[in-house]
Length: 286
Ligand code: NDP
Image (cartoon, rainbow, N blue to C red; front, side):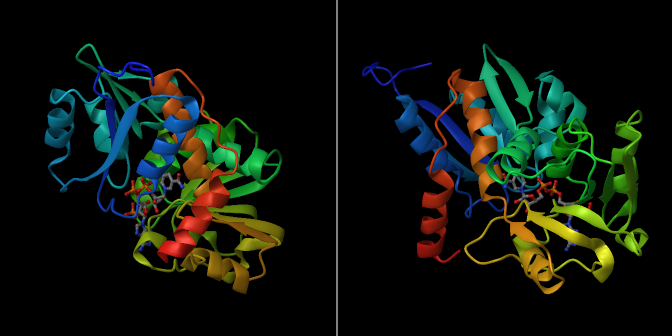
């Protein structure tokens, strides 16, 4: 690991891999973390074709790269590729952070920790005893389940477009009594205090087909996707009277801080970053 003062050493190399990845704010975030933590590193975004993930990781590792963030749709392939897993990655069966050390690929999952920190610390929400709906059963949803269950919600319902995937996820958490799984149609007649969109529908500008009755009085809606404008899910939430809404910009910053700490052994200062990224998104218009 090189510090700011190792002027002869090349900067340590990190990147985010995904498809699509051009929208990613991770290079901007990690560059700012490095500046604040006085660490010398280079962080880029790498677009990877579906089917080319393992090869792309091998190339990056072979060229001396130190670590990767993994985004849509490669979190489960990253889980399969990692040779050693953190406990939270093992529980999630999905990996969003890789580290290369002495030829070994280590995998971690920082999504859940980042989500919970944003919900409970930044937004001040209380999850204990509440009814929580998690929409989606991909890598991000997988990472969120154990940290949400640790907060003892009354129920945690996972609903996914392809219901088999939600049921498979449920079976991976066999001993969690509060956890239920099903399809969107199964939600008819139910109401929740917190609705979290962990699908990538908003990424494609698509609205989910959800029953109007889902919002309990005082319900909050959270979209893991972030954008300059409210996402289709957050627009839906506003139409049906959500008491509060948030996109996933705070989660993005917090999960990135967890990854940075895992790589570099230093937790970066995240203060003010959501505000400055929000301004950047507005200026960029996306
Ligand atoms: P995955 O590709 O692993 O999973 C995608 C999920 O979205 C699946 O459950 C899939 O359902 C569902 N989905 C996709 N399109 C639709 C649609 N049109 N209607 C209904 N469901 C749909 O992605 P990730 O889990 O990695 O990421 C999910 C989202 O979370 C993305 O928008 C990503 O940007 C965001 N995210 C944000 C983070 C942050 O820090 N703010 C961190 C991680 C993720 P099915 O199984 O039926 O195909």
